[in-house]
Amino acid sequence: MQDEIKAQLRQHVEVMTAIERDLAQPVQDAVELLLAAYRSGRKLLVMGNGGSAADAQHLAAEIVGRFKMERRALPALALTTDTSILTAVGNDYGFDAVFSRQVEALAETGDVVIGISTSGNSPNVQKALEVANAKGCRTVALLGKDGGTIKDVAELSLIVPSNDTPRIQEGHITIIHIVCDLFERGLFLGPAMTAR
Ligand SMILES: O=C(CO)[C@@H](O)[C@H](O)[C@H](O)[C@H](O)COP(=O)(O)O
Ligand SMILES: [Zn+2]
Image (cartoon, rainbow, N blue to C red; front, side):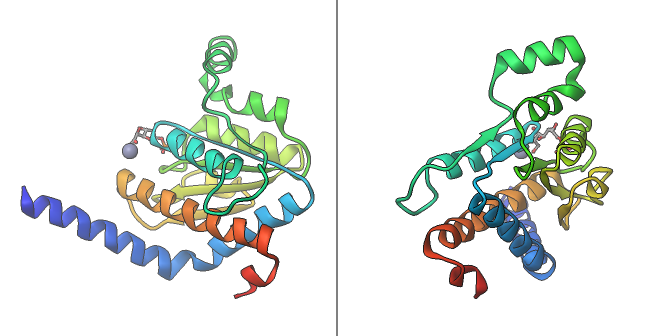
Protein backbone atom coordinates (compact mmCIF):
# COMPACT_ATOMS: atom_id res chain seq x y z
CA MET A 1 0.00 0.00 0.00
CA GLN A 2 2.89 2.39 0.71
CA ASP A 3 4.01 2.09 -2.91
CA GLU A 4 0.53 2.94 -4.14
CA ILE A 5 0.22 5.95 -1.83
CA LYS A 6 3.59 7.28 -2.95
CA ALA A 7 2.79 6.65 -6.61
CA GLN A 8 -0.45 8.64 -6.33
CA LEU A 9 1.33 11.50 -4.60
CA ARG A 10 3.91 11.53 -7.40
CA GLN A 11 1.12 11.60 -9.99
CA HIS A 12 -0.36 14.60 -8.19
CA VAL A 13 2.99 16.42 -8.32
CA GLU A 14 3.38 15.57 -12.03
CA VAL A 15 -0.03 17.10 -12.79
CA MET A 16 0.85 20.24 -10.83
CA THR A 17 4.10 20.53 -12.82
CA ALA A 18 2.19 20.13 -16.08
CA ILE A 19 -0.24 22.86 -15.00
CA GLU A 20 2.71 25.17 -14.28
CA ARG A 21 4.10 24.40 -17.75
CA ASP A 22 0.86 24.68 -19.75
CA LEU A 23 -1.67 26.81 -17.89
CA ALA A 24 0.07 29.80 -16.30
CA GLN A 25 -1.14 32.14 -19.09
CA PRO A 26 -4.73 30.80 -19.23
CA VAL A 27 -4.93 31.12 -15.42
CA GLN A 28 -3.88 34.78 -15.75
CA ASP A 29 -6.49 35.20 -18.51
CA ALA A 30 -9.17 33.85 -16.14
CA VAL A 31 -8.10 36.26 -13.38
CA GLU A 32 -8.19 39.21 -15.79
CA LEU A 33 -11.59 38.19 -17.13
CA LEU A 34 -13.00 38.02 -13.59
CA LEU A 35 -11.40 41.33 -12.61
CA ALA A 36 -12.89 43.09 -15.65
CA ALA A 37 -16.34 41.70 -14.85
CA TYR A 38 -16.29 42.62 -11.14
CA ARG A 39 -14.86 46.09 -11.88
CA SER A 40 -18.01 46.55 -13.98
CA GLY A 41 -20.26 45.38 -11.14
CA ARG A 42 -20.94 41.89 -12.51
CA LYS A 43 -21.17 38.55 -10.71
CA LEU A 44 -20.13 34.90 -11.04
CA LEU A 45 -22.27 31.82 -11.62
CA VAL A 46 -20.49 28.46 -11.36
CA MET A 47 -21.49 24.82 -11.71
CA GLY A 48 -20.30 21.21 -12.06
CA ASN A 49 -21.31 17.65 -11.16
CA GLY A 50 -20.16 15.47 -8.24
CA GLY A 51 -16.72 16.55 -7.01
CA SER A 52 -16.94 19.50 -9.38
CA ALA A 53 -20.18 20.60 -7.69
CA ALA A 54 -18.18 20.77 -4.48
CA ASP A 55 -15.51 22.81 -6.31
CA ALA A 56 -18.21 25.17 -7.61
CA GLN A 57 -19.52 25.73 -4.08
CA HIS A 58 -16.00 26.16 -2.76
CA LEU A 59 -15.29 28.86 -5.37
CA ALA A 60 -18.55 30.73 -4.70
CA ALA A 61 -17.82 30.64 -0.96
CA GLU A 62 -14.36 32.17 -1.46
CA ILE A 63 -15.93 35.05 -3.42
CA VAL A 64 -18.99 35.74 -1.25
CA GLY A 65 -17.09 35.25 2.01
CA ARG A 66 -13.40 35.93 1.60
CA PHE A 67 -10.27 34.23 0.37
CA LYS A 68 -7.55 35.83 2.52
CA MET A 69 -8.38 39.52 2.69
CA GLU A 70 -10.82 41.46 4.83
CA ARG A 71 -12.92 43.16 2.16
CA ARG A 72 -16.53 43.76 1.15
CA ALA A 73 -18.72 40.81 0.12
CA LEU A 74 -18.87 40.02 -3.59
CA PRO A 75 -21.71 38.32 -5.51
CA ALA A 76 -21.25 34.71 -6.66
CA LEU A 77 -23.66 31.81 -6.93
CA ALA A 78 -23.08 28.06 -7.16
CA LEU A 79 -25.91 26.57 -9.26
CA THR A 80 -25.54 23.22 -7.49
CA THR A 81 -27.07 23.95 -4.09
CA ASP A 82 -30.83 24.51 -4.31
CA THR A 83 -32.36 21.04 -4.17
CA SER A 84 -35.84 22.35 -4.93
CA ILE A 85 -34.68 23.98 -8.16
CA LEU A 86 -32.47 21.01 -9.08
CA THR A 87 -35.26 18.49 -8.53
CA ALA A 88 -38.02 20.56 -10.11
CA VAL A 89 -36.03 21.43 -13.24
CA GLY A 90 -34.55 17.92 -13.41
CA ASN A 91 -37.97 16.35 -13.06
CA ASP A 92 -39.82 18.67 -15.41
CA TYR A 93 -37.19 19.47 -18.09
CA GLY A 94 -34.52 16.79 -17.61
CA PHE A 95 -31.14 16.69 -15.89
CA ASP A 96 -29.45 18.38 -18.86
CA ALA A 97 -31.38 21.57 -18.01
CA VAL A 98 -30.62 21.85 -14.27
CA PHE A 99 -27.91 24.48 -14.74
CA SER A 100 -28.98 26.14 -18.00
CA ARG A 101 -32.40 26.98 -16.60
CA GLN A 102 -30.72 28.80 -13.71
CA VAL A 103 -28.40 30.63 -16.09
CA GLU A 104 -31.48 31.67 -18.06
CA ALA A 105 -33.08 32.97 -14.85
CA LEU A 106 -30.11 34.57 -13.09
CA ALA A 107 -27.33 35.51 -15.51
CA GLU A 108 -27.01 39.01 -16.92
CA THR A 109 -24.88 40.30 -19.78
CA GLY A 110 -21.25 40.58 -18.67
CA ASP A 111 -21.57 38.11 -15.80
CA VAL A 112 -18.95 35.35 -15.65
CA VAL A 113 -20.22 31.78 -15.94
CA ILE A 114 -17.74 29.03 -15.05
CA GLY A 115 -18.39 25.36 -15.88
CA ILE A 116 -16.29 22.64 -14.25
CA SER A 117 -16.08 19.19 -15.86
CA THR A 118 -13.19 16.71 -15.73
CA SER A 119 -14.31 14.96 -18.93
CA GLY A 120 -15.47 18.11 -20.67
CA ASN A 121 -18.54 16.16 -21.71
CA SER A 122 -21.25 16.78 -19.11
CA PRO A 123 -24.31 17.91 -21.11
CA ASN A 124 -25.80 19.99 -18.27
CA VAL A 125 -22.58 22.03 -17.96
CA GLN A 126 -22.28 22.40 -21.73
CA LYS A 127 -25.88 23.58 -22.10
CA ALA A 128 -25.44 26.14 -19.31
CA LEU A 129 -22.36 27.59 -21.04
CA GLU A 130 -24.23 27.72 -24.36
CA VAL A 131 -27.09 29.65 -22.77
CA ALA A 132 -24.56 31.91 -21.03
CA ASN A 133 -22.86 32.69 -24.37
CA ALA A 134 -26.23 33.49 -25.90
CA LYS A 135 -26.95 35.92 -23.04
CA GLY A 136 -23.66 37.76 -23.55
CA CYS A 137 -21.90 36.36 -20.47
CA ARG A 138 -18.16 35.70 -20.28
CA THR A 139 -17.69 31.90 -20.17
CA VAL A 140 -14.83 29.91 -18.67
CA ALA A 141 -14.44 26.13 -18.46
CA LEU A 142 -12.22 24.13 -16.12
CA LEU A 143 -11.73 20.82 -17.92
CA GLY A 144 -9.50 17.73 -18.17
CA LYS A 145 -8.67 14.85 -20.51
CA ASP A 146 -9.02 16.12 -24.11
CA GLY A 147 -11.35 18.95 -23.08
CA GLY A 148 -14.35 17.06 -24.49
CA THR A 149 -17.08 18.92 -26.30
CA ILE A 150 -17.13 21.79 -23.79
CA LYS A 151 -13.68 23.09 -24.82
CA ASP A 152 -15.19 24.52 -28.00
CA VAL A 153 -18.11 26.16 -26.17
CA ALA A 154 -16.42 28.28 -23.49
CA GLU A 155 -14.66 31.53 -24.36
CA LEU A 156 -11.70 30.40 -22.21
CA SER A 157 -10.95 26.72 -21.54
CA LEU A 158 -8.36 25.55 -19.00
CA ILE A 159 -7.64 21.88 -19.66
CA VAL A 160 -5.72 20.14 -16.86
CA PRO A 161 -3.26 17.83 -18.65
CA SER A 162 -4.29 14.48 -17.14
CA ASN A 163 -6.67 11.61 -17.91
CA ASP A 164 -7.30 10.73 -14.27
CA THR A 165 -10.48 12.30 -12.82
CA PRO A 166 -9.25 12.75 -9.20
CA ARG A 167 -5.92 14.23 -10.33
CA ILE A 168 -7.83 16.59 -12.66
CA GLN A 169 -10.05 17.66 -9.76
CA GLU A 170 -6.97 18.35 -7.66
CA GLY A 171 -5.70 20.51 -10.51
CA HIS A 172 -9.01 22.37 -10.66
CA ILE A 173 -9.08 23.24 -6.96
CA THR A 174 -5.46 24.41 -7.13
CA ILE A 175 -6.28 26.66 -10.09
CA ILE A 176 -9.37 27.93 -8.25
CA HIS A 177 -7.28 28.90 -5.23
CA ILE A 178 -4.67 30.69 -7.35
CA VAL A 179 -7.39 32.53 -9.27
CA CYS A 180 -9.12 33.56 -6.01
CA ASP A 181 -5.86 34.86 -4.57
CA LEU A 182 -4.89 36.96 -7.59
CA PHE A 183 -8.48 38.10 -8.18
CA GLU A 184 -8.91 39.32 -4.60
CA ARG A 185 -5.56 41.10 -4.53
CA GLY A 186 -6.15 42.57 -8.00
CA LEU A 187 -9.58 43.90 -7.10
CA PHE A 188 -8.72 45.33 -3.70
CA LEU A 189 -5.01 46.22 -3.98
CA GLY A 190 -5.13 47.51 -7.57
CA PRO A 191 -3.96 46.61 -11.10
CA ALA A 192 -0.26 46.48 -10.13
CA MET A 193 -0.96 43.17 -8.41
CA THR A 194 -1.93 41.43 -11.64
CA ALA A 195 0.77 43.10 -13.76
CA ARG A 196 3.53 41.15 -11.97
O1 LIG B 1 -15.55 13.25 -7.61
C1 LIG B 1 -15.75 12.39 -8.44
C2 LIG B 1 -14.63 11.55 -8.93
O2 LIG B 1 -13.41 11.91 -8.29
C3 LIG B 1 -17.12 12.13 -9.03
O3 LIG B 1 -18.12 12.52 -8.10
C4 LIG B 1 -17.30 12.92 -10.34
O4 LIG B 1 -17.24 14.30 -10.05
C5 LIG B 1 -18.65 12.57 -10.99
O5 LIG B 1 -18.57 11.27 -11.50
C6 LIG B 1 -19.05 13.53 -12.12
O6 LIG B 1 -20.34 13.20 -12.58
C7 LIG B 1 -18.09 13.56 -13.31
O7 LIG B 1 -18.51 14.56 -14.22
P1 LIG B 1 -17.49 15.35 -15.15
O8 LIG B 1 -16.34 15.82 -14.31
O9 LIG B 1 -17.05 14.42 -16.23
O10 LIG B 1 -18.28 16.52 -15.71
ZN1 LIG C 1 -13.55 13.33 -6.55
